Image 1 (cartoon, rainbow over the protein chains, first blue to last red):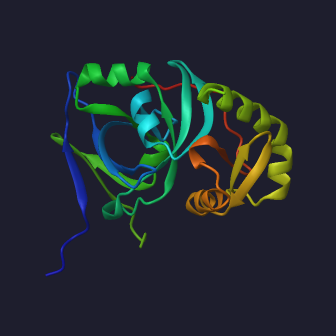
Image 2: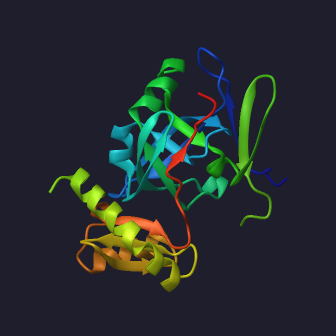
Length: 139
Length: 80
């Protein structure tokens, strides 16, 4: 029997139950780092991490941006999620203000993942968990 | 020069170079900027990183932008 496609399923978590996704990033020295990020389709930024994490993980600086949470520092991040066919570089941002907000929901959360990244996978949820899986037709 | 100084200087260079970048490179190409000039370009980020390293440059000190992309100055993060 052929196994079905990989599905990452995460129980809702936090003081106000939040959807979340685990992503693995490859730092410039080749080390891998997994982070649990709140999934927020209302965020126009692919990924927002705390500033320390961005400093650890960015491969090159990118243009920054101003937001209702103040200025965010930009950086290119390298995804390493072969199980979801996510191996591309993505534009990420660093903000301790955003990081503090997600940390207040759960200390497990390292930041926020927004629509530009979520639209590169299929996602959904039910009464107990949120899931993501590879887009159909992506090798 | 501090990292913040580098970022500000490269951001100013990008504003000046953006029309040239958009005219010169296909949309979606990755372009590196440092020392007020374009120091490399490639169709994907990994190739640009390798190209910068082969020139003896540290990619973590090079501003990387995508040709043909206009980055917004301000966005609202809704749901937090």
